[in-house]
Length: 228
Image 1 (spheres, rainbow, N blue to C red):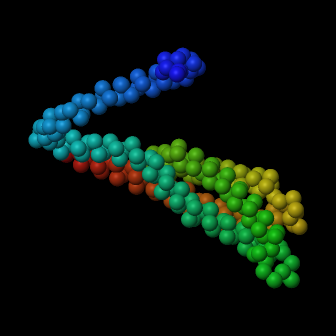
Image 2: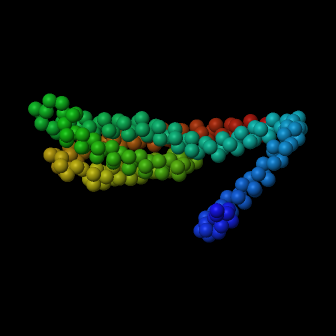
Image 3: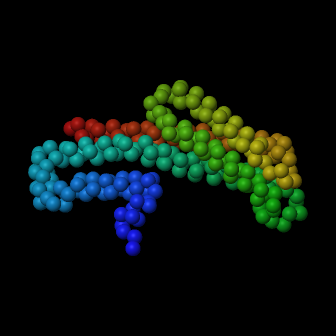
């Protein structure tokens, strides 16, 4: 009968190393957790002493403020991207699809169900996804609340041009090859929508700045409350 040691000697060296590391880790975790298991009364007593300290409420306020300060940038980006989806992504998708349907033959019973319309919508969705990724990068580099009005207007123009350029390029690349309407025809047909789309983008930039200023003011007010 094969003994345990004979069996262990046949185990590959890599497996032995893994088992050894896991055992050492388990022993380490056990040692670390022993004080928390063995002395719960001491822990409760220590927490009670801290709570009885006159500075304890102030400490809690500062801790909560630090947590909010760290979490607010991500929360701000989420709020800004919701604005982008509601005021730009969805309206542009609807506008372009509605405009594209005008190019389809009049004898189409349900234009929105036509293969050309479905393929075109896929290209629009993909292009909008790329644009939204770019806008998200703008949002993460959030300093809209710290620049002057003139700087903001300049940045708004630059970002609008960038977004329009990205969207046009992506639409050119993703235009379905089997579409009965060429990309050139669609592009020329959509030129009259340029001002409308830029207006939507400007609304988004203004909204993103308002959210950034609001976030900055809220954190500043909380900081003043803690200082008092």
